[in-house]
Length: 191
Image (cartoon, rainbow, N blue to C red; front, top):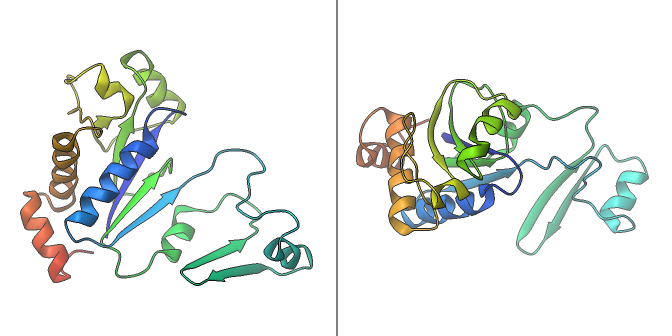
């Protein structure tokens, strides 16, 4: 599985970039997963007073919510879930996982910086404690700059930008051209 982490400060274009990449990879025939890290204190996907909330309040260690076309696991954790906890929930046949706001030093993760402006780029690296492994820049910054001395810049609001970034991700995952990696994924030879 190819894992991509979109790392940036609030309102920098992470969701727009995630949407664009998910749509592009889906159009190419990949099975895509998405992860969104919520940083708000006390945030819960559950709604007070609803059935799942009531089951948890009654003492359930976890609740699975099902509808006609949706499945969700709601589980309280004593601490922030680890990246391995996230990966354990991802279906085995997933080709590409787009992680929005997930910061990890996992060696298999391809990192991209999503920045609001050139002026906030250094702050993004510092606040998010980003080390090595960044392959590109995207987000709102791409409306102001098209080049950077250290990283390629992709505007994911433009089709050519999305295609170029998707190709770079595939090439980064396989060390070769994007078409070679696409072929391997479709044949089931990439993990």
